[in-house]
Every structure is written in C-alpha cells, then in structure tokens.
Image (cartoon, rainbow, N blue to C red; front, side):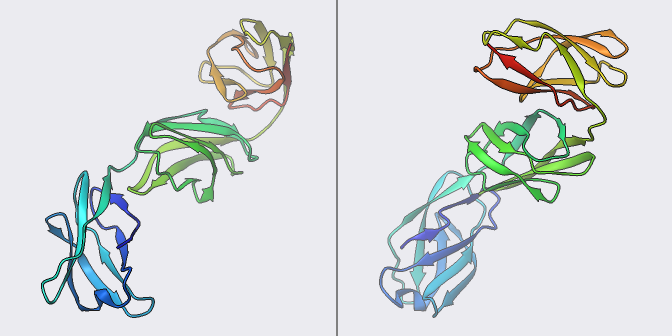
Length: 244
C-alpha cells in the first residue's frame, strides 16, 4: 500500500495518496489511521483507483493503515513526520542584480528542500543537507527581498537578501596571491567605504579594515587555483583576483 508522499509536517495538513496493490480494494474504505490518529478528508477515487486524505498532526514515525467498512485493516506503511524548516542565516546577504551568486542557507530541517525562492523568483538548488542548502541566486531588482525555503514540512521565509546595483569597479593591489591565502590586498572603491560594507571573495565574506574614504584592506582566504570575483557591497565590483 504505497503512500505518496511518505513524509509531511508535524503540524499535519499534508495531502497523502494511498494506492492499493490490489485493484478496488480500497473502494469500501471507512477511515485512514496515522498511528492512533484519524486522517481527515478521506476520499476514494475510482479513477485512478486510489484514496486521498489529509494527515493529522503527529511526530516521529507512525504506521498508516486503511480501515474498510467490513472492519478489515490493511498492513501498516510508515509515514515520517518532519519538523518545519528553520533558517538561521544566509551568506552572502548581498549580491548583484544578475543571477549567478552562490548563496548558502544554514539552519535545520533543510534536507527535504524542494524549492528556494528570492521573492517570487526561483533559485537553483545545487546541494542540500539537514543543516545547509546551497543555491544559485536568480536575477532580481535592486533592494531587499524575502528568501523562502520550502521543504516537505512547510515553508520558512524569515531570511532576507539584498540585490545591489553596479555603479562602478574596484581596484585591487595586488591582483594575485597564493592559494593558501594570507595575502594583504588594498582595495580602492567607487564611493565612500563604511563599516556596513561587505567584502566578498567569491562567496566568502571577509572581515576588513577601512583605510580611507574609499579604501579598505582585507586578508585573502585560502582558495582553489584560479580566479574569483571580488565584490564590495553595497557597491559591486567586477575585478577578479588570480590564485597562483
């Protein structure tokens, strides 16, 4: 008696489809039990011969059984209750208007992520674990947007990402360094630099010191061989620094 899906929110309200391996066996169904709790909205569909129902609230793993009008009960099939997702942070918190920025969302309950959106625009999920989801941010308009993470247990929308326009470029000195990191880089930026700015080497946010009205300094992190984009938020740079 397959279930689809076989997992859902601890708060219930998941629509579950039950399919029998024997045709029309469920046509006389009277109720569906999730452990000791009855499902609601139990409906038999002659075509395509299945039953839909709404899961009750619960926790852990429960056995789902169909009860027929003649009192017979089906074998139990496990259903897994999953806590609602919770996002703690995302990094980086700013990015360009164009798509392509790698954003890491950390939290719990993220391993069943089915989608991430920045406002109404879908991001591309590249990896996911219980504690972390990595996505490629979609294009967006300048300003802050809510980041929504949807899993089998529901949606979390408590994080914010800011799209930043590109008014100029940065000058870096030096423009290369060892892959082990540790290189001191002086950055000259268009416009004033403040302590609320954010400096990114690729997707890595770095601490920095302000050395002038439009200057700052950072220490490079370790990185694989190659070039990375260097950005200062809220102003975006298009310079690249090489690793050697």
